[in-house]
Length: 266
Image (cartoon, rainbow, N blue to C red; front, top):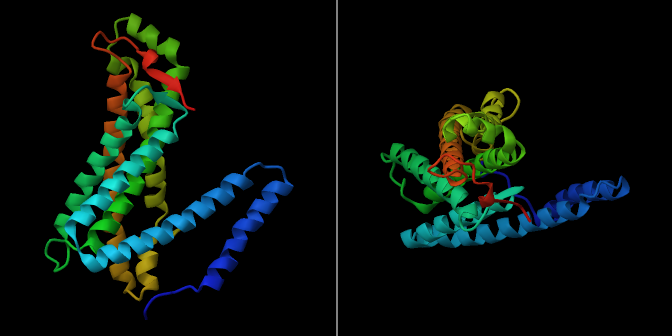
């Protein structure tokens, strides 16, 4: 079995589902048809372009091109996390918070994952490095975005309560601990749900892809288990780094809350 392939006509027919959803949004005055169509078009163009880039990259096997692609992925992910926040940290820290968190966690977890494959013949090939890094990065990006949104929004709403705790002599860590816990909890919900539902509710992407490509289901299951552990580690590491960086940025050495460093998103 060589795996499933789709013709251009089949892809066009599948796009009819999105067009139908956009039509329903227009009919019911939901107001999401424009965003849905733009996101669908953007997704299709991006994936086709990435497919061309990866085809060239895999054929050339140039390590510097692989590094350049990963740097571009990390940069784009950092921007996406920052762009999704309702409240933003002023200045370059707006993107630095997410960039440092997701870059550190992705590189660390991806390096660990690849080190476990060091016994295989082609573990340094771009076709191994890029997909593993991309999957880990996607999870870290989503988790960080949710956690930072919860933290920054919570600090803005609970300003008086936090400043009251600080006035009573609490440290910034003590005063903001409830906000940190809520943010970490919110960020970990998606990956926990993904792990809890794997195999019973859903067949995760890697396992489904390997089965469709003709891989033995038990081998596919083992690969998915390994990957889910990596994703959980990346999500938690990224969230913890991001929220603690935000904590220290939004307070000072005298344990004062610095909301002058926070602004509403555009």
